[in-house]
Image (tube, rainbow, N blue to C red; front, side, top):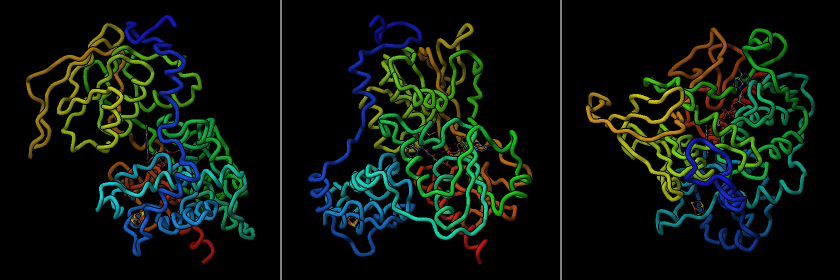
Length: 444
Ligand SMILES: Cc1cc2nc3c(=O)[nH]c(=O)nc-3n(C[C@H](O)[C@H](O)[C@H](O)COP(=O)(O)OP(=O)(O)OC[C@H]3O[C@@H](n4cnc5c(N)ncnc54)[C@H](O)[C@@H]3O)c2cc1C
Ligand code: SF4
């Protein structure tokens, strides 16, 4: 190894092979059968269980935990998958600390919830590793449905529609299906090619064709798709990124955090990835945390997240913020970038302190500089490529009911649709519900 954490500039191989292997291994390895039984035994199997209400996909949590407790994890998995076909990924990536586990009566009483996420992973992994698919298609209906986007929302919609007997074509511009499961989620949450394996497993239902390299706007039009299909689902996520609106934004090595993460996810040999000695990440959400943590895990010496408001306003959960600081990421609050400084490429960023008052966010006169070989923008994603003529509200596709857009025969689900948090589990719930609504309207 010739490079180290102290090597100036942006270089690969800052760490040893063992460090990379450890840093990018499974952050919460699967429970074994004994651990799962012990964890399941802590559940009170509550009537009107609050955990179930807090789950956006309404999984019957007490039922699946009881099925684990009685030694039938495959039945537990079927309970999960009947509500959430991406229950395997959600078990890995759901912020359970702000959803089901936050309201678990064990958490409320003792400050230690039943480990619902890890139990879900135990059950879903057990069934998926058998390779078989737990559901069958209904008799063919002869209806054809186009789904734009092969992320969690599109895949959940496609699976539910296929199960009802419809034929589904999923279009996506990327070379692989999976959306942000494949290109966004932090590597250590979903190692070992799980996202790809999950898509293969999901498609075993049959009746779904995935066409990659095809997107709405380049080659496909909404009118064309509507003419050839009985319904269209828009599940195109948020493909655009907000601009910093700071001087010097166009300098080299000022990049989108989402692009950085996508590149990292697709590179199996992390030692090949070049990372700066000093990395500055601007933003306050999950993307900022994931970019910063993974920069640190690639061997950057100094990684700083800078967020323009206080910690309580960050959309990354307290748990995620703690995770970032635990690996050595520094989080600075109440500061906003005013200038990226450098000669061709970024070298420093100038920040102004901010004041968040009733009149909004104000920049103070006092500023400070941070060294930066790389500046990562993680200040939110935006809707890009939505077809013309569609009602847009608050920067997203306006929907009523279960994802009905302003154009008859066209539904929207997931991050691109208005409402709900931008989470994998919410995208799955919205995709599934749009599919149920399409089925009801086509067959009613
Ligand atoms: C870095 C990062 C980390 C995250 N971590 C977590 C996490 O740990 N836990 C969590 O719950 N959530 C997390 N999220 C949020 C979560 O990934 C999203 O909420 C979820 O993926 C949304 O699913 P979706 O199907 O709506 O969109 P996406 O997953 O974005 O999928 C949209 C798909 O549409 C395709 N597409 C785009 N434009 C077109 C077009 N014109 N025509 C056809 N197809 C198109 C894209 O290629 C993509 O495959 C994270 C997000 C990011 C950015
Ligand atoms: S709230 Fe907690 S104890 Fe009650 S059913 Fe849910 S997981 Fe079990």
